[in-house]
Length: 335
Length: 231
Image (cartoon, rainbow over the protein chains, first blue to last red):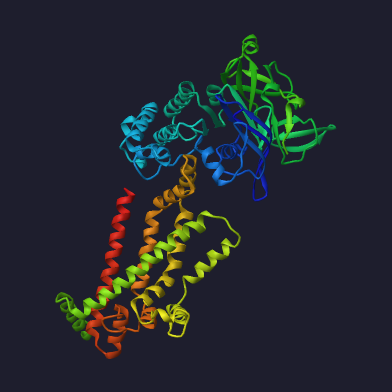
């Protein structure tokens, strides 16, 4: 087992930002860590890279309990490298940046240069060997940061939103590099992202985080609601036009999440709108494994996940008017 | 006004002729100021780094104390050091009073808070990603500290220059602990004060010009270094 955590907790100024009752990550795999902003992804990566100490709970790394004291952490940090969301390069050359970790490990300059060249080659940045770090673009900086991490030959590579601030071309290149690192070097990789499609492209196993806690599924369709009691039902209004019935009590201002898999979409044959029936049209379609992701505009954009077969049977395509049903069991009150 | 212009030109000729008395005074000033700046930097920079990097009870109190010490008058430091090195004091047997070493000690205490607080401020303002990046790449605490120091070097250099500027222009400590002994502990500022008392303005103006020139040169050098680093 690469990582195992029990009741792992991190607090900032008394506010719990991460609370993981149980976590198991196997060695040699690629994991996607998915969740919205503020879900605790970066905090978890900081703990897994031993850069921060947990406020409570236990973490095991390769079946050994991690003691978060400085002498114990150094050898662990030399096995796990975190590549930041917005990496920063030291004010030196690209080569010096990439060779930094090796220098810290006492490697001689000749051997170091060889490894640096090899790693820069891998990320397609060999021509930048002598360039100064500050001259690079965001995508190039990200690639050098990956080469810098790679040069340390870590057992585990952690990526915090590696393509959050780069263009499409760089995103494609970075994703290819991450896949190649895993395939060629067999490193364990954990990629944190809020892009479901990216997680699906890179990882075979995906962990969901929401509000600092592991979740069974990725919370989507998150809305703040105004709650009114109408006809004996607890009805939540999203804006002024969209209403859904809630499974339990809630207060105005609470957030709800509607599970995309629970949403039913069918061709619109007319009839009244209401909490159980929302009229709209398909704004976007995209493939996601054996399912199709639909964004339906019903006054607010609602994301639904349908089986490809079902969509083909119904003959639905972009722009078609549809009737959307959000059953109570697919709605969770997040508070 | 004409008296100032006359003094100014006389001072220039004094400087051109490398007047021995002028050179001695400038030499003593530079020597004690450089030594005290060096000593304060050797202690103050690690002190600032240590405070910045570590978490301990009373950290805020220490920072507040250092900030308060920034405004400490030179005469208070003069009195404080005097109470330790005067003939009958604890370190009286070392015969430090009225020596250049005494001035260095006093000036050390004057600028130690400047170097420490400016260093602390420099590393506090430095992007924390430098520290985290160094750590995740396997740097030890010491290596991480050196990385931070390197990335904050220009701000720290500015702290050292500011400290040097403070000691080269101070008078209280040099007068109280050095005694203004001619050719021995007479610095530019104490000599200027003396010449003023005597009504002899030529040497005072010449020293003033040297003082400003040194200050200008140091700042130009710092700007050049910072400019090169910024490219």
